[in-house]
Amino acid sequence: MRERILGRIQRALEHRPKTALPEPLAAPGLSTEALALFTERLSENGGEVVRLTGLEATRAWLEPFAQTFAGVAVGQNVPPALHPQRPPMPPEEAPLGISWAIGAVAETGTVILTSQEGRRVQLLPPVHLVFVPEDQVYPTLFEALEALKPHLPSAIGLHSGPSKSADIGQIMVKGVHGPGRLVVAVISK
Image: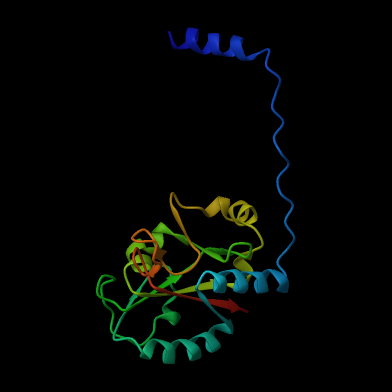
């Protein structure tokens, strides 16, 4: 039965012209322009970008930043060296959530987060800090997904700024469906 149905479909389609698919987009390599564009686009969306050089500089920036929060929820992929000296809290109680991005997209100002990182850390705290290595910032989403294809989990989150909605009365409200503040720390080597 199955073969008969598939055979009928195949015969019906064999006289149709083949549709030509467009060529993949050619994306330029990572450049200072891509990093500038990422910063510009994320800022336009209400996010904040901090540029840091090396692990020591990142830790030096992180500790005073984290001190302003009573506690923190840290994602599973964040390296232990980037766990601030703050009391750990469950994501639903923590004022700060910290995640590690698997990539970022310059054209949209988007960070790419894996579900393996822990979605609760990404969505429940009112402030979300995301670390992303500079060499993981891609010019386009296409290029990011192509580069990450071998390591992509079953689900990813694309975050392009703080959560916001104008569903009720057409009034923009931040932090309705997730963090009201998104800070992305781009770490160069």
